[in-house]
Length: 476
Image 1 (tube, helix red, strand yellow):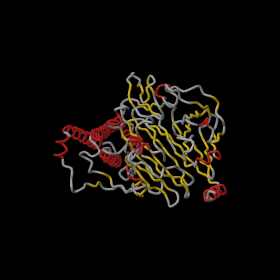
Image 2 (image 1 turned 90 degrees about the horizontal axis):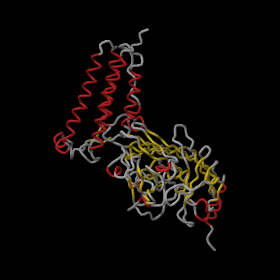
Image 3 (image 1 turned 135 degrees about the horizontal axis):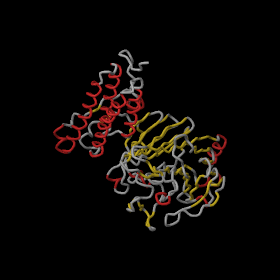
């Protein structure tokens, strides 16, 4: 049976990942008239770029001539491959700013497989050559993106994206959600989730007089911990780690992500946002790897889902163990009435040299005024989960999500006994895992890994009403 497509066959639809903003129609590139890019200015500032772009054009030309030389293919297949080639060009253009170049190539391969699924076996070698040409065009886009600063020759070519904002403490923060359930985020300040309101109630703590001159040091919201969560040591010296070749690098507590600006790479104003951090000179100084790190927040009817995705865009495998640092709103006077329930765990702490102390069996439930919780690590020995119960609500951490990297532990911490917050922090690895390996993840070149957690909120209306009435009673 001849499986070739015929001239009347429909061309497969372009995959959704080629459309921005979750499947909306493509938006035109906006080039401000005040400073239009010109080939002359680009070549003069980046003389190597001309040769790279010529190479990309040759790849495209080779692929285009290749498919039209396959005279035994049906017109439908030729048309489908032509569409695919156009998409490859689109991808290479977008790769100047878009994340996930290698995953984009993987998607191209899959779509090509669908497009030629009914073609003769003889096409396989030609498809392989075609994909190689596509890979060439995409890799050239990667070269352009890596070597051109964001405000360089192509900075004026951007995709129009509307970012809904709300003024908060004198700063415009990105707003997603609904009237009484929403998020406020500061992508430019470490991708920080600043405020999470669920059914009218603040779930996270944020100080009224936050120091916005150094947001990374503010106690509140959810700082993103990447590439390593916690403290790391070399010979007792904090803030250092040793790579597999024995070279020592400097890296701050919890990594660098919370100190660097993220880009908003996708947004759905009512449901979700994706923020992206890419490797740069600032990151490679202490972490010499090429990567894309994404934080994806998605509102749920009863809570929030957060995905931390790491993509290896380099040529060597990279180590990582990201984490969260949720500051949950809890008046210190209510700590004795709040609790944390855990599955089977082992409780441990970190020694001054970075190594983990001997673990002891964890309790199934702790009151939050229990001193054993302070700066403690709770390593999971059963399905990872946690339930934080505070007066008026419960927050359940669902950490065993399909396709997610395993969460190794949760950390519990608060700054002082009188702080009006309490931190319950899911971590992929233990502190200093780069040296002892407990929770250390390795991502191969071209691969990606996601760590997904869901936070489900349930409200105790009677308890919440009592808390509110107690708060309204004037002091005697």
